[in-house]
Image (cartoon, rainbow, N blue to C red; front, side, top):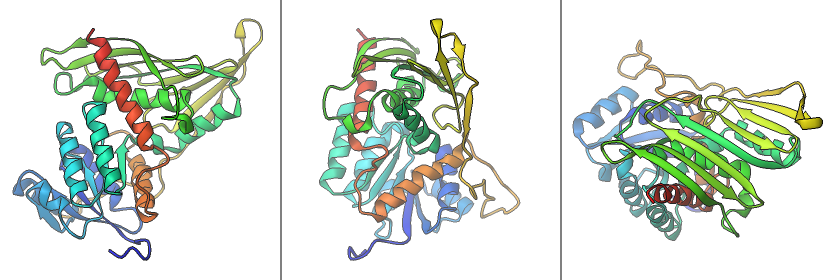
Length: 355
């Protein structure tokens, strides 16, 4: 590819054929100037099945072959989560930009190795914490900066689902969304990595018989005496909401707070903060012209999306396309320093809980 002018069409390879890959491929096929040209799997049968289902011409029986396709610009890493670091490095070694599903790594040390490799190769890397790319998240920050709810002092998030206990870590599966939310609302993104960062002040967990954490609670102190708390679980349910608390009111983000489309702002004044204003609602539509697609090998079959608000993956994918076309090596909406700080918090929470 010539470096003289920005690329128009961005060509993707998908590594992995699971549920999230089935959602993302439908998004990519509907973005302008975007092509999915390759699918990589751990077997020829799986690659063929996925490729024929979604009309992907190059069907590779290994991740290596997909990542080394000379016509691919971006690799979407949707392999089993424990493979994410090695598959990110595989793509980077082959000169590809990377969008990696969360969690990109099991700890901050491994995450740093991946981020450093991408930087050394001058390649775009984006950690797929898709929350950061939703318009509602940008509106939350605007409200905080405006002072509409006074000075923000604390925030909480809860992401508990009765699904997956024992198969993976609750911290890495759902806790990462809580940690990134607290970072977004309690720390100025411009200050991330430039001074005293958040500190884990407390954590506890329960373990599944597999030895993986299944339920975790944590308390984090942020700069300027701000406090954040969260709970995550793969063994029971919660309302999966988040709230920001200021000196003059609150911002409530209902289910699903990690891919939000609604915000409720309530101002509170007077003696004991007992005078509540009429709540102000902010609602955001999911991307227009994004819908679940019929399969290529059966036009009457529309499987739909697997996850809530998956249409919002378009925000993340469009940002990757933009960054790639502009020659960026990270997204300003979720920079490498912000990503690494979230991974550090997750690692330190896990270590603290094991004391």
